[in-house]
Figure 1 (cartoon, rainbow, N blue to C red):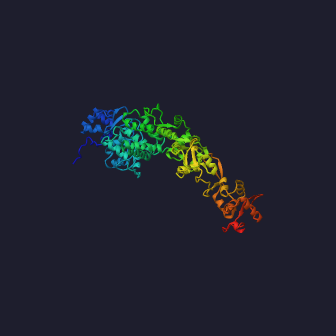
Figure 2 (figure 1 turned 135 degrees about the vertical axis):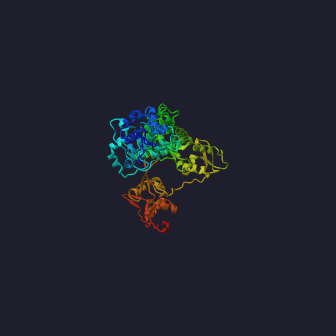
Figure 3 (figure 1 turned 60 degrees about the vertical axis):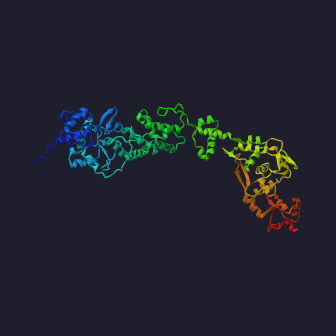
Length: 605
């Protein structure tokens, strides 16, 4: 029995047209050029996909013409080619480079021979690096002297058979790639029914690659010698983002801005390779949707001047301002404006000072907030009191204290006017009451003005105050019999020197001597209004001092006698006051005066 005569090999769907001709030439042991010439075809025209050549090859091999046309790399425009059922350009298509799976080729050579080696069209796409069957990396053979020799697929394989054999023995496997699967589906079936369907393979690959690189923190343009594993991970990340639709892509863009570590962020730097890629293809209509979303993100996120073009268009309205522009529009200094915005938003000062941009709506918010404040001097003028008295009202909580910088205090204008409105609602007179103006009342009673206003605002002086004549709070008149007596300070905190003197019922000179000789401890604290250091006597040192010593004033107050009479009695009894160097302080040891057990000194007489 004789073997059947095979004149032409069957066409395998998915293989290149010139690869099919190269296989047939190898079957008949000739070159593709001679094979075509013998059958009335022209090898260069066939490689270029001329219709007449394809029709003749289909008639000779009894293959469907539409199938040959589908898997022919045919030029359809300047730099654009039909690839299966989709389109690609020279940016991703490698027509004159032989890329192949070494395991597929070695298996075909072993099982069938040279005429059994099928060149898959998808191997010529640069974005595909892995064979779906063997999970191994594709390799690229060295280029031939001229392009038509490169199209002789079988000839190139036989020339580099040793290199292919070595590559097939590598056991390293590549993981699957969602991007490569997506591209293969496009080649075999056609563009998917999604918002990316108008992109050719080149635009799809570059968009996914640059988007993935930008989301991964890559700055600048994509390097030419990018490792395969990095390139595949970038493409997969970019495609996953794009497959979420326009909303998914729009949601991913702010991540690049938030990831910026620069003191002053720029969209070209934040978006890195994505921006550089889109800027180079901004005139392509297929990318109009992608460009529109990206452009709008830039307008909504970065301070873009009205005359600045981004992807060929200028912003219709300006949403963000640089700090310099915001400073000029608002009239505030840049640092003060940052602190003011930080106060409004409740942001720590350290973070607020890092701001570089201001939204136009924030300027409106700043103007509204600033208009609601009043400074200390103006508030004092409205209330008819001294600025220091206004601070005392703030310290007592009668008026709120707003600090934008480290030294200046501000108040809410509504609280100041509200205090004056409450004053106007008081009765103009109080029958059977002896009334005196507020200032005179405070002097005669030794009471702080802030304490009187605090009690009045809490309603504790109802029926004891009325509206008189005067500016601001000075129009307040108080009953002479109002219980606003002077009170001693409480030891619930560190005390200033005058407060410590009042608490220990001594004088400031004595407090200084006790401090200088180690009986009391001093602390320095920064005054928040002036940034100057103020001296305080610590609460703990006062308590320790009181455990061992008692001042003349404290004893006289307990015994209800005059201090001078008690001092003369102590001197007659030989009780020595506390020595502080060459000076004496009228403070005595509790044991010496018999005060340790709680018995008062008067019981010893």
